[in-house]
Length: 401
Image (cartoon, rainbow, N blue to C red; front, side):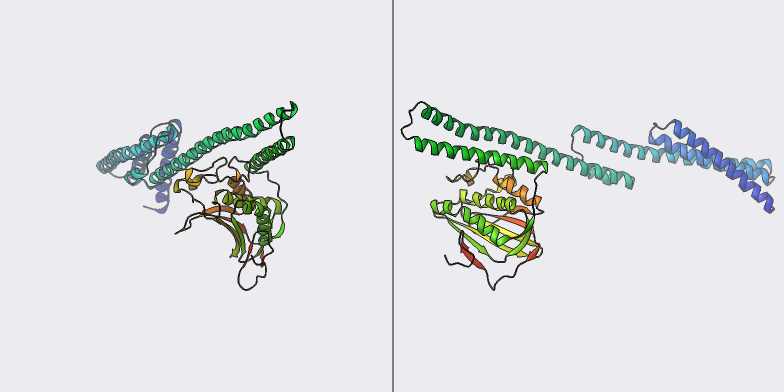
């Protein structure tokens, strides 16, 4: 066969294959919603038709005898039919795998658990990957749904507790005000002092609610400035030292390594104060609360420990939920240093995270009590003396007890 004849045969075969391919593409477009097995069979039939067409062109170009042409066609058609049967069998398997993916997607939408255990039985690697991703998505959605439900319950409980915490002081204020108004108060000055104390308690609660609202909305305005963490923790502890002494609780500050952090002193001081107040509320009379400041790597830490009843293992995940107050394993102390609605630790964590830090709790192996760690990114370490400094709250660092 000469070169021109060969070019004619190749061009003719390519034209037939292109025509068959265009026809198959149009057919698949028309049956776009058909099952996957229809698409597989269409592709195989198109390939067989292209081969048979090429054989016919080649037979005509080579001037083969009628017997040779029939033999070539018989071989091509037989091979094509076998290929189609194989495609049907394989396509059915792939179609069943696609059906399994569809069932998994429907289960995901209906809230039924999707398992990735069946992924190994699917014949196509892409299908296995899709099923595993569906199972992973189902796990993430379930976790998110559980978290939303848990937060909804926590919010509902918070509203109930706040309503109760507001009702009690307001009822007391009303009763005492009526007694003063009617001239029935035996000691007006004492009644006025009690009213002022109740108003202060309500103000603290309202302030905490506003703080939680700002934190949740991401609207906490911070005026950052370089601050000595040791001085800030010492000042905060000094503000509550009188309360601790009145309750016969030892409160000491240990500045093991001072550091400069870029924080809003007012807001971050509030976070530290809430953690210290939580420790004082749960420390027993005659107990101890320790505040330790140190730094390591790129993080500065304020660790607050107490020797109270500790934290029940099942309570750890709820410690920082707004409104959560704990179980009898860590019941509130008689001290009332906050608004009473269980918002202190939630505010502390929210403020710390707004600064790029966090508040966490750590175990105290071999002893009672609890420990909370307030972390903040380190800006610049300050020169520290050899050894740590330990002082009672309210005394300058380095002053003897």
